[in-house]
Image 1 (cartoon, helix red, strand yellow):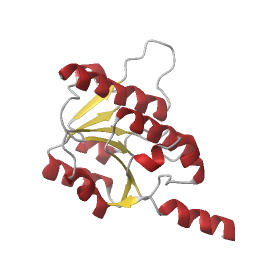
Image 2 (tube, rainbow, N blue to C red; image 1 turned 90 degrees about the horizontal axis):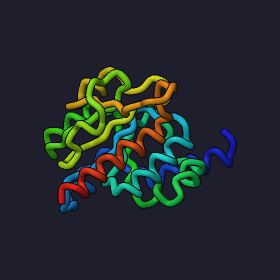
Image 3 (cartoon, helix red, strand yellow; image 1 turned 120 degrees about the horizontal axis):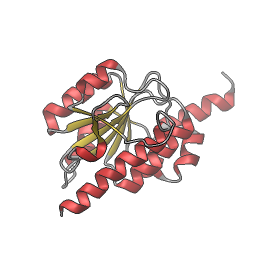
Image 4 (tube, rainbow, N blue to C red; image 1 turned 90 degrees about the vertical axis):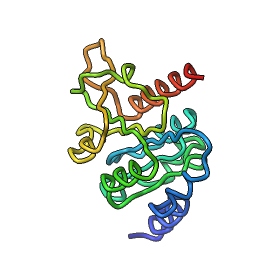
Length: 185
């Protein structure tokens, strides 16, 4: 490891939060929780774009696993255009266990995305306390993560491509939730 890499890793981890910070962050909110969970997103450009969309959509926190996922690098921060500084980014050791704890402690509903789901994202109620769960590039949600979801939804596709990039799909799902929440009031 060279000196430049070592210091970049140290500075990037300073604003990442841990599981211990999660419930403290969520306890101070006075509205239905809105969380984004990213299951093993590895591309820094995708994470940066997801954080930017999360900020724009009013997401309370973004949760990702510590292993097999990118953290807050300089590239992520640049692509996020401020989203990495405004939305708490929480790295957890065990994503499935964190989802289980969140469900018990906060009554969150988990909506995962899958190209094979029967329901579309437009057919699911996204207005209450909820987390949108997005899978990694190429492989989608891991089996255990998908099992922890209350619902699986797909984005309706009418073109010839099979799926969207994870950062684009995240934006679509987050703003469907924003649309539903605005229409509820």
